[in-house]
Length: 455
Ligand code: MCA
Ligand code: AMP
Image 1 (cartoon, rainbow, N blue to C red):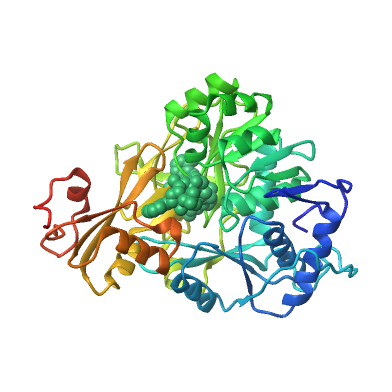
Image 2 (image 1 turned 90 degrees about the vertical axis):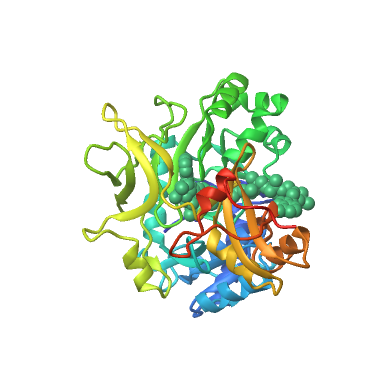
């Protein structure tokens, strides 16, 4: 059983508030049962995962039915939606939160809802190609949420507040299933604005660094969070100045945690523990980590094992195998260091320049390049993540093209992929610098040491 919905924590009328609408556990369970009845027997089902009670009901309904839930990004263009639906084989359904079923099947009672069954398929980008479906079992999710509850002393006494998208691990697994499993009240603010966080009156707050830096820049909003118990940041590195501003304005030292869609959250600071800016804490119970460093070096690729890992990329055994070392450790692709004195981990960066994190979203450069190359007027494209004070990195596309504007290309990407994958900037160049093998030399693009601009 993945959630506490069967009344272990009593039934609060206001157990959930999502984008301004409130529901009790009983109402959620009724709506989720109706979803479960609709999707029973399907190989998987998809819902356009807006920030809404409907998405929450879909996630719980999938767990009740033992049918994997595929949350579709609501801003995805037709090509991305089609890819996800075709690749997952999911049936697309609409959820009507008002249509409730009072069937007697309680959580976990449905046939097939075994812990080792796939519960979620989350699509995420690699460095090249289209997004892959990451298959997560109920057992992996439960192990992660229980480890986090222990690390953060997260309980039914808490009110969790966040406004993150409900189609990724952060907002959906931690931010929805975590609240349901711990029995804490959930306030989803619709969008993660400083003002909405300030007005929500929670004890526990989740955000990506972009959200925290916008809050830190809004002193009254930040000060309003001073009554909270714990502020948690993740999905990308929290800049040290943002950490310090938050501490000054709220009196709280934000806790950072580290994870991936494929591994769930594996390393975290602890509530009540010592927290240092620029570090992500120590491995959660059950997780083992190691640094694959060159002899004599202290930093290297972070590799890990544990019960929270995914069961593979859907239908891609080669990609799954390539994600592991020969001795069975998952290769995160992140470069990290571990303090020998206390085991505290520090994420130094990504191994690949082609993996971009913008506003906490993971975006593969190759996916955007392919979309741009699909435009008839584009002959070459190279996409990089340029350091950005607000977003961590912002997507910049270098293109060789004629007879098309940057705004047109940005819209073209939005229409094919997702709105949040749009380049912020399109720079027209005469040629993309390449090495002798023909591979784009993206470091030159980042430092600006490349050939003449077009036009
Ligand atoms: C954005 N806009 C644009 C462009 N990009 N307009 C034209 N061209 C562009 N290229 C528009 C937006 O649509 C929006 O318009 C406005 O500009 C502001 O956009 P933006 O600055 O992006 O702000 P935002 O829309 O508020 O987004 C920032 C955000 C968002 C809220 C922080 O990036 C976000 O929700 N990030 C969370 C990602 C996340 O949950 N990742 C977790 C992955 P308008 O205002 O009209 O709409 S899971 C994970 O990483 C692991 C497991 C982990 O560790 O958690
Ligand atoms: P995603 O697949 O969207 O879940 O993104 C996972 C990636 O986010 C990781 O591989 C890291 O590069 C990055 N990430 C997540 N949390 C942190 C953190 N606290 N500090 C630095 N990077 C992070």
